[in-house]
Length: 595
Image (cartoon, rainbow, N blue to C red; front, side):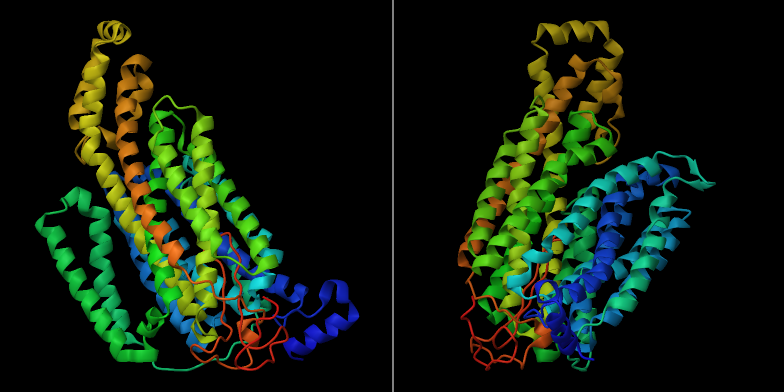
């Protein structure tokens, strides 16, 4: 029995709960499919937060603190490169086999990471794991775009919010708890962080293999190998220098070599994509679509401001406020709450009205405002003020990220849903990598002078003079730290001494560090103003009411035909559309009467 026949049969049996939707699937069928997708997305989301919390402890255990960056960089390189590959291959040959492949690779990579005996071995295995991770989010969101129309998205958005919120809460707690255990059942505590992925991944693999049956027209074409190779040549050196440039020096010979190789790779990629035409990994014709082009640029800009700014919050909460990594992770919950609440609100309004352009505009205003609030943050700011600032930033992200993908998917023909979805993730991740590198470079380049100025100002304070006289040894420690903090090998690699010295003596150090972070937040606010301008340029294309998997025929460019849409965050839902009316059988020109 076909999915349409099953939907019709179920609808006649119980029209109140199982009526056939414009997507061609019943509510129950969609929930069954979502169960597999949510497990895969939970696997990826949890891994990100768990590993980031425990990476310092892992470095200590494997005697490789200085190699921590390579563990992050290796995973980032492979997952970033794999993302557009999954999108294109899923469009051509069907998404299910590649989603299963991504989960399987992620499971094997996790098991190998658990067996690592050095940081460089862990970096290699994390690179392998990243090949799987690149497909978990992009393919899941593309599949959602196949089965759920834009106007139905709010009905299912809560499930994705629950997954995103749960992983955000559990990640820091589980990562900190496991990393804090020397041994657990005879295995190093940190190794359980990767071992946990194995049973969760196996469960996801079995569920997806059993329940994921999505109607999708496969279009076998040749694979764009030249484009894929050129993308590797372009991204690998640029991502490496983004992570390592602060250590090497941005103008060093090694960095300059990476710039040149990356530039050659970019030029080769553009040439290969233009030559490949519709067979390209990232078809250049899509950038002639104004919504896709603006959405891609906005994704990159938001990635720069978002990841660059948010990376600094845990540093502030740990170093300045003295919280443990686990507690610092929990203290970022207002950010998660802002994303969840405003994402659901925007989804509900879009579902009822079919309008969405206003949300990126409001979201960018909130992002700029939130970053300016963080800019005004001081070492003595209350946690309430910090929480409010984080909630405002989260609200801006919640209004932006899913709506951008919604607009991009809705603006392209159904056959390009995978490319549109993976492109959003790809550009946002590239922007995020650049943002983290630039913002951390800003902090570490000015922090020495900021701390020095804070101590120069504090020496005139009577309380500081008394504390310095009572603890001359501690003052010497702080003096050495201040003189070395501006370098990559300085005291900021280990600030645990702050918890062991007099609060009055430590306070100027924290003030200087906060002042350095504030500079980066101000830069982030300025960058996000560009995103605000781009949001005003997005053209609102009426949302369709038919899922891409049930589109009657391929829409002609410029004919006002249906397209597809979805979400852009780990917490959002996907949507999709095609030609015709709500039953998916209309004319090529479409029918916007319901929008």
